Image (cartoon, each protein chain N blue to C red):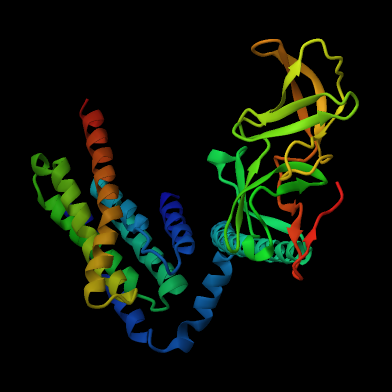
Length: 152
Length: 269
């Protein structure tokens, strides 16, 4: 259910900001967040990402397979990086860093698909980061809070 | 995470990557996905409706604000234009009043009345070239308002009866008592040098007296008011209400002004 809700929120924001702003990848944020927290839910999350990506492409991009490819690859890489670490190394800053890095490939694709060229790329990138970083920080805080509570 | 889980996950992941790549390979053929794109769009039309409505409302609100600012700007321009038109109309109106006043022969237009000497003197647009001479009495609505104190080619100065330095010999019509009318420099007019014991009352007419040749007798000045005060000696001073509206002087009549053919014109008082 959370996959559907997060996808819908992203879609809702996309409709609101059509042609004006790049909408944050809330769907991917939730997928990565959940995939790093639940080691056994990998397959389920991968399929959610794949289907969500295809739906997104059919709805907005008109280029099926693009978002799903990036979502799946991002999820696989994030999980591989995270679970390769020893448990003691899975700290909140590392969690945040992986989450932030997970957005980079799809962000670049969105910038180019949005038509930004030249200096416009940097402008769009920094604008994108301005709302992406608070989201990543917020997700990291939630992760830290839940980590602390589960330890107790 | 167990090796079994990890292996399964990678297999699923690789399958999805292959599927995505195949889809990407077929993506340039629009006809393959056209139906799917339309279908997804149609399905999502309903859940997306609130967002569309919200976006439309936001647009409408922004347009409303934009329209409002345009209207305010236009209102400002119209107000400015209105002020200009009013000014132009006032100038035109003042010009026509000036022309109307100038048409009356024997009347002089007040061209200057300084605030500092408001009750003392005014300048008129008639001078020696129009036959105005020093000492000529000046009337307003048939009542004396002052005398010409100096006269140049095209203008003259008139000293008003409310000036404290102008003294006019007068007579009270009803009792034939003589006195002098002088101003206090603050708009007040007083009948001076009336001996105590004279029976005077409010409303009696004050006119110029036959004392000097420069000022013809019988020109009405005003009426006595009920207010009186005791001055030095055995005299009373009575406040006189001027017959002329001294606060609003636009056009004045010069008594005894020379006519263009050399004669003197004197409107009967």
